[in-house]
Amino acid sequence: MQASGTNSDWRRHVWRGTGRLLGPALRLWLQRRAARGKEDPARLGERFGHASLPRPQGPLVWCHGASVGEAQALLPLLRHLHDLRPDLVLLLTTGTVTSAELVQKRGGPGILHQYLPLDLPGPGDRFLDHWRPDLVLWSESDLWPGLLAELRRRHIPALLVNARMSERSCRRWEKLPGVAGWLLGGFAAIYAQTAQDAVRLRRLGAGDVIEAGNLKQAAPPLPADAEAVVGWQMRLGDRPRWLAASTHPGEEEIVARVHADLKQRFPDLLTLIVPRHPQRGPEIAAALAAQGHSLALRSRDEEPTPATDIFVADTLGELGLWYRLCPLAFMGGSLIAHGGQNPLEPARLGCAVLFGPSMENFSEAVDSLLAAGGAQQVRDAAELAAAAGILLAEPRRAEAAGAAGQACATGAGRIVETLAAAALARLPA
Image (cartoon, rainbow, N blue to C red; front, side, top):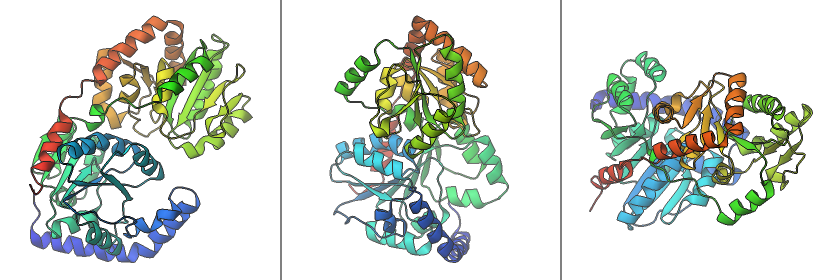
């Protein structure tokens, strides 16, 4: 649904005026984030629209994904676009330090990275003036009114891909009649993850909505160095082990309690914890060591010994390694009110998957994995310990669950090809 020119103009002016008022506070906020390691001080200018790279010649596709998960899902699409049209300039923006590091490691040829500018008139205008995108692919639900309004004013076509809209978010948007419709109306087409997402987006006033599937389900297995896998398999030997992946504050303590419970049955058990934000590693290690656990920290090049209870793998880009080493993976963000992390990543690598009650971010994947027998949902620490104990005690059962989940997670469909064709259809030949 395309908003009328009059409505679009006044909303744009209101947002730009508000942005100017908020500018000083947002600049101070960014500086404080940089001091805490949540922004890259060397590239802070990008957040104010000052590009750190020249714009190459040729048609440019600007893709935006808020954080690690969105960026990781977009990369296969960008690589496919590069294969089809090597002349394209592919710019990927994100908003976090960890996602920037991920793109640097896995981006591939032809993919440039910048931090998303602040949604303020100055930074947004400078960004668009420099990069002059011919097409924009916006991912999921990270919508910024000022930038989207400016794209509309400049007649730059935009597609919303991998779009999702939870029922809770939909109800919140419905309290602001017309605002969601105005935002969504700036997209030439919207490609929703599920039929339910499509219905909710239409409820909010979106026009051309297509149910396309989930890009995160189309992603290839997370990579790992083959020599590293073999080396770590030799180090860990036959020790029973399980992995808590992408954990959030509050969950590491729960995992440690589960470890203590399981250790009564499996005395040489090793628990691996991979925090969602690696910079939290030392903090996690200190807290768990104070509870009496013996720990090793990956960022300090420490290796688990036979006496190590918990190995904190606080590095970026190694989840593929740890999933290959553990038959059982618990997904973080699910025992707190967060919405969960991607359960398809361990499933693709044959892990039996466990997760807590909060998995709204991946409801379609959860339903598929549960139906296939590749995952199990638990309500709390006691149920997590019970489920993990059964799978550790019965390796064949864990192997069967892993195989079922792997078959389910690799059924990706043709979403990458669908979205690439939609993008190319709106670009200069």
